[in-house]
Length: 251
Ligand code: 13P
Image 1 (cartoon, rainbow, N blue to C red):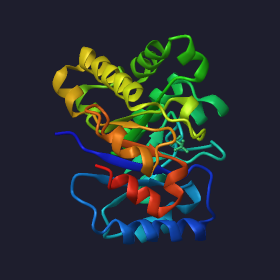
Image 2 (image 1 turned 90 degrees about the vertical axis):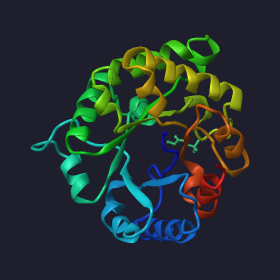
Image 3 (image 1 turned 30 degrees about the horizontal axis):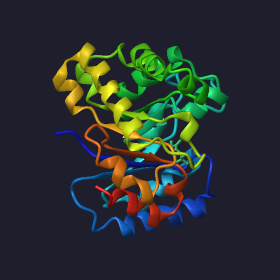
């Protein structure tokens, strides 16, 4: 049985104090959450140590939003996987479209990052998704397949068990525009078939695939009811504990 996950990507939002308050609210409100869903929060790097403290003893896991593509050394401004582990992270998001688009994150760099994360025993939330132009040209299946193949096909079936895929159509991120449940289910099933083709049906069946892109309490239920959607990677709505928990309760 694959895991259902609702993960909150806080992006570049909140001060340390605000983030701590948000984490505490998430912990408090997650107490009556069922066993059928796991929660993850991904605050900015500066917040990790104090948020980790707030999450202690709770069911909420800590994720980074990125990591360096090098293990250590003279790489000013970068944060290594060992640093993340020492800050009590158990996950890192990698390959978010904002990193690909604004910070030149390439598939080759992502292979290095995933390698380092897995070697440090971090689970990875690996993001894929097409932009509007690609969707309108009917290229979304090809784009997503290439993103999965270029990076994840470099790993073994066993390594894949530590990886979660997040499908995030760029045109739905922060736009208020959500993929319809049909559009999301269609491409999630396709991603699962791409994984199955390379790694076999069992690995694909066990792979958690999250939807991201204007997911909120009002549409989460319909999205999560789809057979190949195993939760969400939530941006804006993760900045309010009530909304984030309401989404998690949509299973
Ligand atoms: P929004 O939920 O704000 O659209 O962001 C989605 C996202 O990019 C999560 O990583």
